[in-house]
Length: 216
Image 1 (cartoon, rainbow, N blue to C red):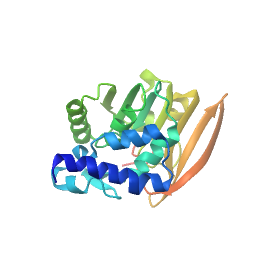
Image 2: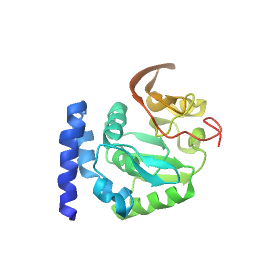
Image 3: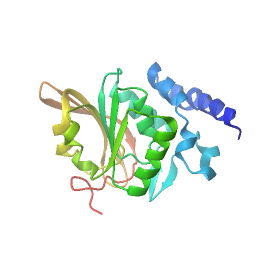
Image 4: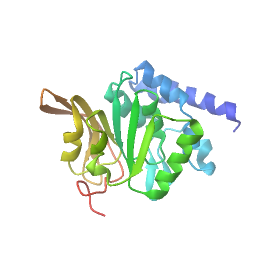
């Protein structure tokens, strides 16, 4: 597939996978149409990068299907000024989408090889507003908190208290919660000290490993 065909594939992804399923935020649509998803997967999988399914990225991890990336991003309701914490950098695709929509992204990954690959791709794409590190993501990144928005891209048995503590007021957190076979994708809001939540969709994510998630 030639490079210019990737742009056509992205446009088709938006038109056929995202818009019919309720992705209507124009800023999110533009970000999904702009970020080169194929650069975040292995060369052998690039011709599948815009398909309606997740793909393996190594170390037992995956890049979520485009619709789920767009759904979680839209749920954060970003305006452009926010400081966002992402738990689970993975290949970095979700980080790059968020970076198009907010002021700064702080992203935490526990697997060194994925962190290194993601950092190289950020550098290649000149994603200058992404800061990343290797650590236990369930503990968040308290040094730079509180965060206007938090996104967790792996599923835990509950919402880590550390992330709720680092969420600004008002603030919004998106996280899949459940068992290892299936989860509820939760939108959690903090307003005037009150925490509320609603289920956006039924999902299945890789496990959130850490001291406030699942054990190894």
